[in-house]
Length: 185
Figure (cartoon, rainbow, N blue to C red):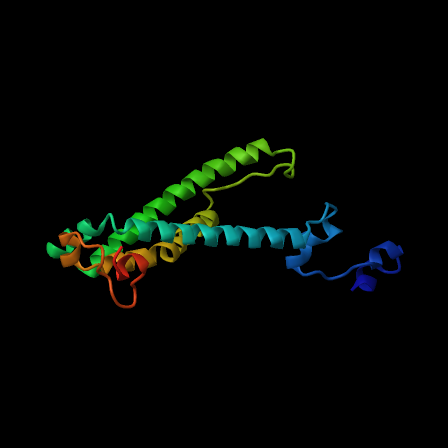
């Protein structure tokens, strides 16, 4: 192909090579300074570790606060609320918290971007309201809601209303029981 279109011109043009698109920013083929793949992978792993720890912390705090909400659950179940309705309510509460945190993180991201413009490439801009970014943010928020909120919602939905209304701190038994509810405090 080179011989067909360039003929026997300068040898400089003969140095063509194929490169996968996934490796494009990790080589100096674009003329810019290449990104370090090891650092980027390390930052992704660090972000995932922080996210998992935040989810575990949220689960711990929600289950610890379950004792304070036991009377609410008992009254709602006594008035005819089903376990599914309670689970959906607690998941909706978690979704609201995750969406508020997502909005706050967007504000902090924009503030940090404006502060660190000297470290970023020229013409770097974040498009939060593009379709692909909105789909990602909404999907990721729903995933975080399920990961962080499902266990506390199931635990609270399984709470025994009779014991909750009596003021006992024991009540959930079975596959969703844990330390606060499986024995006396």
